[in-house]
Length: 503
Image (cartoon, rainbow, N blue to C red):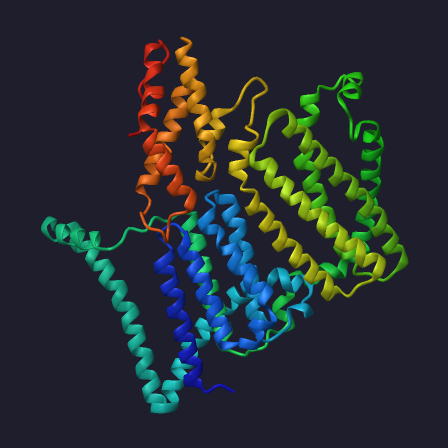
């Protein structure tokens, strides 16, 4: 058992680390700095648990490798998915101090970050209680009462100072000027979604660091978030039968053109563009929900449940195949988009999970191995997503179209990852004007890129916060700023144009 003072010291140390993380990372972009923070966490883990680090080297390297994409990628959606994956991997690493990740169930794997977030709040409450108890044991009841009164005085005094300060500021303009000058010294923190994410992650950092220093076993009830799902298998079986029947009807109706070509679609009076555009996201969502039902069904040993699971799994496989085929048709006709490429990665992840569940149903592999396989499949999918460099694929490899031409407005809204594709838009609009054509889209395109340049100029200029793509994108825009000005100003020769420069 830890001594009370040791427990308090560890909570204080963990709290200081979390506060340091928040103040260093909350109000500025993440680049190489996130890689360093993640590496520092892994070094601390290896220093405290060398044998566990060696045993879990794969997870540690995955965490470090994924964090590197915060320097290499600028597309916020991929960065958020990567962040969630790094959090999950690091949470599982900390859990190794009291358990083996090969012994985790699926619900434990999904909920382990929530466990450490909840532990952070309970630890703070316990820290306050331990502090009072420690003071009481050293100075007796009188000393504890004295500390309680002092804490109460500090809280009440802080509240009264704020109230009186605002009243005095309103009462005297000279005093108000002093207060305003004082407030200017405080860094301005914009309250937005990014800040809220940083606050939540700082709480998680506190829980993870504290978890490294305390050998408190994680109890089964702490993973009880998904515990109730397995109690309703009989009810879910009935629901799956209904869904199975509906899916079968859907597949039968679509059987003749599930993988349809142009000729068959024309015979059915269906436009190819309509077929390519519709269905992908809906089928992916249906497949994702269905996998949750399949997961519950595979936990049962009854033969009727297994057969129902096999039938339903086969239908879901066809749905996913249809969704991926529709995605290929869309991209072949209309080019790449962010949503379609992210959906494609998600569909591949779903196929991997479906294959894992199929192997479990046939070979009856232990649930522990299923969890490990799903975990590795998730990490692999996030690596694939980052290696794809989605915005660059959209901007350079296969640009999106509106059915009649390239959607340059969409390209101009991409992150810095797609900066190489901006040149094609400039060339296009310059050629249009050289041919004597007026194009309002040219002004919008240049305005978007000038806005992007303005945003890049406002970002901190150091290697710790900037991404590699941000540096390259800003260099390109600065170099080609005269061309942007020319493209933006040429519409002034047309009656419908106006000057809307953001700079």
